[in-house]
Length: 319
Image 1: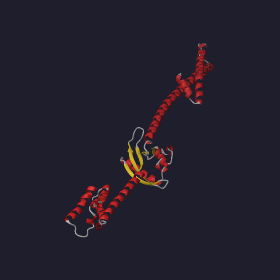
Image 2: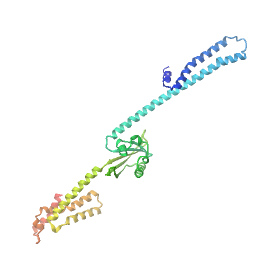
Image 3: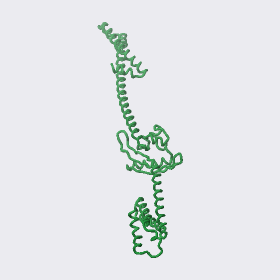
Image 4: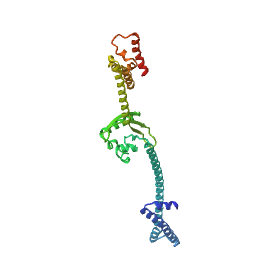
C-alpha cells in the first residue's frame, strides 16, 4: 500500500490519473466478472448454452476478467519500473553528491596554493582547473572544463602544450619547462611549468597535472643580487688596480682565464661563475701590501718580494 501511494505521489500527472483509473477499474472489472459467473451458474445447466448465452458469458465473464488481468500486469510492471527508477535515481544522487564533495575538496586544497593548476585527461581535455588557472585564462571554470586547449588557448601555446601532454602520457615521466611570456601590461613574465603524470583510478582514467609557478619576482631579485655582486667585484678589482697600476687589468684577465678553464672542464654554471669571481679577486690581498712596495720602481728586497707573494695566500684567506 505504501509503495502504491509513493508511486502515485511520484508519478507524472498523466501517469497518475492512469494509475487511479486502473485502481478503480480493477475492482469493478473483477466484480463484474464475478457477477457474470454467478449469474451464469444460477441458470439452468440441463442444456448446452446457446449462442446468446455464450456471447453473454464472453462479454460479462471472460472479457472483464481478461481486462482485469491486463490491468494487474500493467500496474505490476509500472510498480517494478518505478522501484528500479527510484533505486537508480538514489544511487545516481549519491554518486553526484560524492563527486561534488570531492570536487569541492579538490578546489579548496588547490586554491590554497597560489599556483595555476590544471588537470588534463587522456584525450588532452581539461578535467579540472583551480581558481588561479581560470583567472589566468580570463574565463569561468565551467567554460574551461571538458574542452580541449585548442578551444581555450591560442594556436602557438596549444601546440606546445599538447606536445608536452602527449610526451608525458606516452613516457609516464614528469617534465619541467621554463616559459617566457608577456602579460597584458607588457611586462615579461617567467613561468616554470611542471607536467606530472596522474595514475588512473576508479573515478579518473588518468592524465597529466600541469602546475605553473610564476618565478618572475624570484628571477628579477636574483638578477638584481647578481648585478650588485658584479658591481661589488668590479669595485674591488678597481681598488686593487689603483693600488698597483703596474698590474692593472691583470685581475680581469685571470678571471677570464679561470672561466675558460672551468668551461673546458665542463663544470656546471655555478662553479664556472665561482671560478671567474675567484680569479678576478686573486690579487685582492694586495690591499694589505703598502702602496710604496707596489709602486716601487727599484728592485724589491727579499722581504718586500715575499710580502707581495704572500698577498696571493691572503686573497685566498679573504675569499
